[in-house]
Length: 294
Image 1 (cartoon, rainbow, N blue to C red):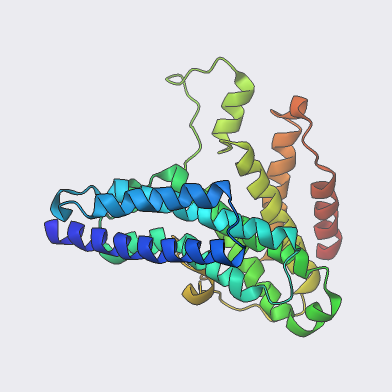
Image 2 (image 1 turned 30 degrees about the vertical axis):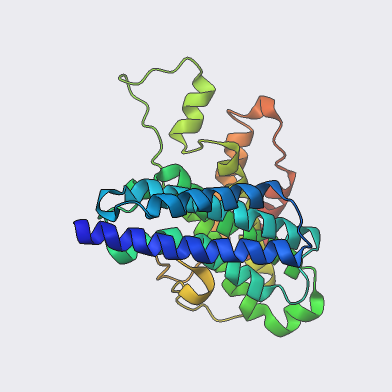
């Protein structure tokens, strides 16, 4: 066990050094830009370096991994914002892959070292959800930009399909980390609407956005990739990074999209009716699926 802990600490330290070097490179590239997220990430990595320098057998790998993960989330957030602000320039694919790789490292590290049968015990559900959300949301934004490029779609619709399937997989993964709260006599809630949300597995606004994003990506898949032959899809580590589940069956865009958007509309017009979540786009997509099916 001590050897396994030391191995994780060494690897986290190596990854932290690489991330710190990447941050310094970003600072130089952007002419010594002072950015809150880069500063916070750099500070976290400096703290990580100090902790990793202590006696490794006494180190807590969970704490180190959490610190590294928080730094990665901040560092990649800065770069994601730059891509979005620039509407993903033509040569963005390599940068997107790089960011997906960074955001996948924490999961990969835990799996490689078999620290626990359920690696979520080391990272925690919230961080795992955040890592999956950030990867899925990044691919959603990238695909949204690509769908506006007609010539690119004509030449590379198969590549769009891969990005869509990967993005949907990350978002569904994010939605499935925590089990819905089972309502029974032993569980009491002061607010019935909150109880309904928790029983539906909706724990935050981000969960709702993940539902809408995945539904919209299913729509793009049905619209732009429908003529392609379905293929079994295994997560490609070079592009998509770590995943808790591998999509063995072909992803049916219409089936998945209908299921999740119907749930989204039901929740928004039910427990969240007073919050005025917009369901217009979701209903238009559901109508598209209905006519496509018929």
